[in-house]
Image (tube, rainbow, N blue to C red; front, side, top):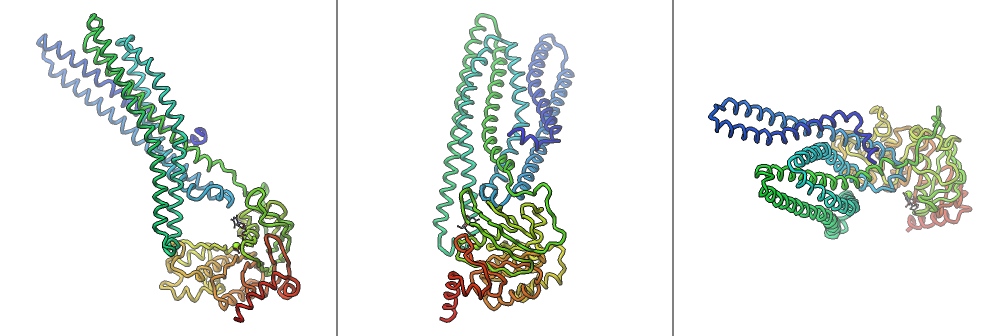
Length: 579
Ligand code: TTP
Ligand code: MG
């Protein structure tokens, strides 16, 4: 994992080195100042006794100490600045790489992570890693350096007493190891709880209208509270573990200090040490212990970062299941012929949503697909632009398996109006232009007229420049559907797929839209999924799906003669009309 993440530090090692250097400068200045002060104190006392004039000496040394302090400060500032820059760049790269990876995810990949978890991984987890990097750069060099130097001084003053450090080290080591062992799973759980909060918030914000319509505010608030509560509990468990370490460390530190003064006093009584030496020794040993404590805190941060790092790597390591083949096929003059050959499909191993589907749609044909809800209509058309791959069998476009196509080239020739249509914030024109970024105003108007959207667009306050709120919430369902149809039509696709996309449009308007398929899209293969017989009646071929299998294929008249399911649908819909 470290190796993988270190890749994103490429080119930043110079900055990391500078940061370490700054810390060393700061540490050296910090350690040197007390020793110099001690030396000045000794010299001044000696000079006072001999009656020498030492004003100039004091000013000189004072200025030197000031200079040293400023130098140390500069070192510290350099570390702060450089570590911030390095960690910001690191997290920027990491986020970018994750975002690029997620953009390439297939629908199946996205299904395995939830969107809320991907959001947490992209934001919270990366920030955690960024903070850890800053901490690493600031502490990792400084703490061990101070520790080693202080230990060296302590041993040089009195090696016997300093041996207490050797006794304490394994005890502290065991405590830290235990905390790390129990801390890691806790931190991992904590990130999951953050996922959970994000999920509740996202669902609620997206579905706020449904929540209000069902007067579910209180229940949803409770859901949020319980998600927050769980995070708080998990957080305090983890924090509890961390805080218990502190008092234990403090206790150990105090034990050490008592020991030093006790043995120091004994040594002093025996005339082996003087009082000054004892206090200097104590301060060096405290310095060693404080730095051990810093390193332990750092290790804790590292455990938390490990949990986040794993989650980030999970995203980066995901194998994208829908990728371009080795020699991708790019069609010169696509026709738009679609053929399914013995296609079986499921969303997971052993799932059978579609079974043995075979049919052929010639270029320029209009194909209707009809069947009860949940019978697999959407799943079937999703296979054509390769949003999912078949489990077995083949989907051919112009005689070539879609898996052999260059994915972008394939999707370029297909226009899709999904069942769950989505518009984006921006003007109406911007949204239509998704289909064709270079479209002229005339082309946009032509597509909107074909989709029966022109009239209502002109009624909007700013016409085509009207700003859509997020997701096009300031439009009616039928208006949104028509914009989505225009967005697909402007591509002049060879294959146009309409998944129940006129369900919210009245029948008269729908008939007009249908006319444009017949008149203006003569070369386009149109696949219409519909609930109403009237929507597919004039199609060249109608596929009747039943529980994932093709029940019958034919035109309206043929199906009226020999397809029971079709007759049944027709009868119930006629009955509705007659009544
Ligand atoms: P669909 O293909 O969505 O069925 P449908 O389009 O015929 O239904 P509707 O008329 O209501 O739009 O679903 C077929 C089965 O596949 C159904 O059991 C749900 C399941 N399914 C998934 O598991 N994941 C998916 O992403 C989709 C679209 C469907
Ligand atoms: Mg559907």
